[in-house]
Every structure is written in structure tokens, then in C-alpha cells.
Image (cartoon, rainbow, N blue to C red; front, side, top):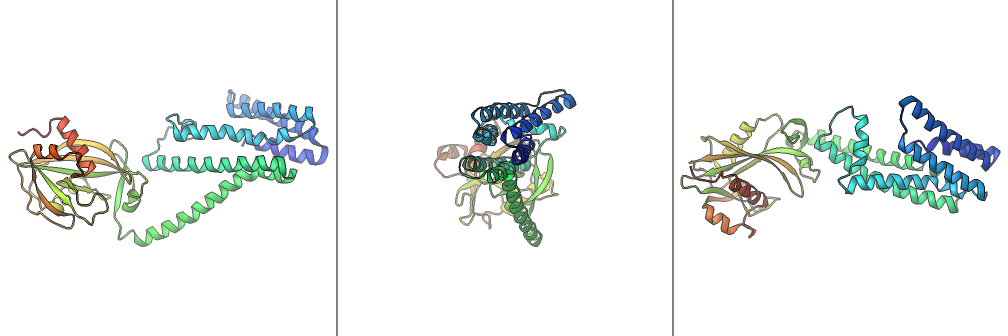
Length: 352
């Protein structure tokens, strides 16, 4: 935005009084912007300073060579700086754009869903800036002054407007579909790392790669001899079909407590109703399609009564030695192997 006003002023003045007058007007307004920022906020706005420096440098070159091509490429050079900021923020831990945005958030923190959307929009912004840079360079060398002026001044904003319009239309279609099918589809709570609920989302959205963090419950059932009951996932399951997994695992529905979800899932999956769960772990699990906040429980000296259901095709007790022998052999789900290692590390699996 700081470079927009000088550019428009240059185009207008150049049209009536020539290139030199246009450059003088553009440089003057750039310096005025810098001075205004300093007087009002008592600081040098770095982006305005960079923009004004390039304005002075390229204007001087254009004036000296009596060729405005140097001034014409200024928007592309500013875009290169913006591209560098976006690349660093997207592909490295140095999130400069995120840090800059904090001044407008008044101390508010983004939740996981907002962070995912923010990163997605940064990538879209990078693609638009790259396209705009190429258009600016092409029009600077091969198009008329009027075409270059329009592309340089309004091209990026026009592309952003088109993108936002497309997203708005898609979102409208999504919400209409959501309204139509939300009664049939499950709503899941969206949480932060500490378990605080910050919203809700449809189950399909949580599982489409958005990586929105949502809570699940796991229950390990330990026999009197220290063995673990595992269930074999149905071959019809979309995720890890046919593999052995934790005795009980399922999502919380929106508005449901952890205890209620655990009792419901234990009853539905393995027919277990009378048990006393011990909380043992809470951790984050990331897969290709989702991010879960796992609440892990253990129940000792109980026996499931349901050994097959729609969720599983088989269930039995495994000795700890037998489990260790089959680790890494595609017998168990990756989530179970990760959780088993955590339970083993913290001594949870020791027989009492």
C-alpha cells in the first residue's frame, strides 16, 4: 500500500506534465509518507523506508538516463522483498509475517484452525505476488505506459479480489451444503494444546487434511496377567484397515465430556460398561489426514464381552512380549505403536 499512492501520482502527473515532473511528485509523496509515519508514531516504518529508498534510487536513474524503465521496475522490486518475507514465513521457522500481524491482533492468539487457514493464505499470497511480479516486468518492457500503470497499481489487488470472490462463492456453497447435511454429520470440538475448546467443526473437515486439532479418547484394557486387549480394525475402515489397535478409541462429539465419550466408546466397541479408567497420558498425534489430542486411559483386570462389531473383526489379549516381537512389522497401527512406546517409557505397563 505505501507504494500505491506515489505510483498513481506519477502516472497522473506524467500524463500532463511529463516524466520528470511525475518523478518529482512521486518522490515527494514518498518522503511525505515517511515523515508522516515518523511524526505520528515516532518510528521509522521499515517497509515505507525501503519503498522510499527505492523510489529515490530508481527515480534518479530514470531522470539521469531519461528513461522511465528504471522507475517502472520498482513495483517488481518491492514484490521481491514481499516474496522473501512470504518464503521465510512459509518454509522456515522464522515467521516474519506472523510476527508482523501480531500488532493488529491486540494480544489475541490464533487457534489451530486459524493458523492452518493463515498458512494456506500465505501460500496463495506468494503465488499471486509471483504472478504479479512477472506481469509488472512484462508490461514494463513490452506494454504501453497505461497498461503498465494499471497492472502496477491495481493488478495485485485485482488478483486478490478475484481470489477472495472465488473463496467467498466456495464458502457459500460449503455452508449451504453444511446446513443441508450437518444434522446427519457429527460435529467435533476444536481444541488448543491444553484441551481448551475454541470451536467446533464437522468430522469430514477434521479428517480432510486441515489438521484442526480435536480430542479423542483411548482406553487400554489390561488383563490380570498384565496382557493388553487389542482390537483388529475392520477391513472396511478407511484408515489402517485390518491392523491391530488400542482396545477402545473414538472421538468426542461436540458438547460431550471426556468421561461420557470414554464410556460410550467402550460400550459400543467392546461391550465394556463396568470399569474404572485411570488417566495415564495426554499427547498430540499428527497423521496425514488429521491432528488429534489424545486422552489415554488404562483399566485393569477387566474383560471385554464384545469381541467383534462393525468397528472391529476380532479382539484378543496380547502379552507384552508378543507385542514387542511384532512391533514394526505392519501388524499394529502407527498410532498404537507410538502410544505403546509412551506407556512403556513411563512404566504404565508394569503389572500391579
